[in-house]
Image (cartoon, rainbow, N blue to C red; front, side, top):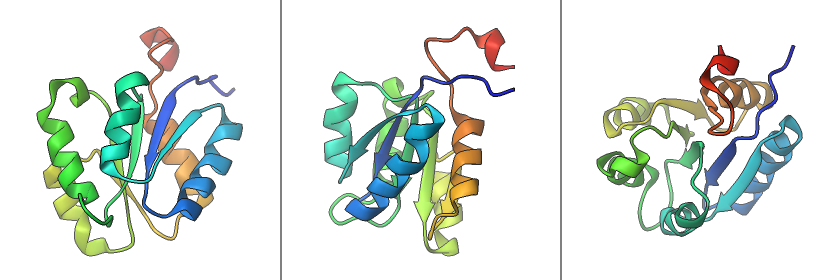
Length: 133
């Protein structure tokens, strides 16, 4: 039995095609997906629509995903928001975890793994905790 989810997922990637893939996979699963092309754009979006989960690309121009993750973890408002890093390089895994990431997915993304890890980490602020167990 699938637990209905109404979680907002903030997907952050400088590649528009990657964002469209994330949206195409997660929206049919019941997630509200917000798309941001940069860490700065993600902050603007999160100011009016706090996410329940962040999918964050590691390699982005300007502020990297790792730098954004560190900054967000230093902000109490982001302390409880799971951050899943998206990376093509396994060498980034340790750095992602040290920056405060909760998990990571390898690029190119496997659709089944994306769905599984998103469902695993998603927490709906509108649902009682007991319904998540």
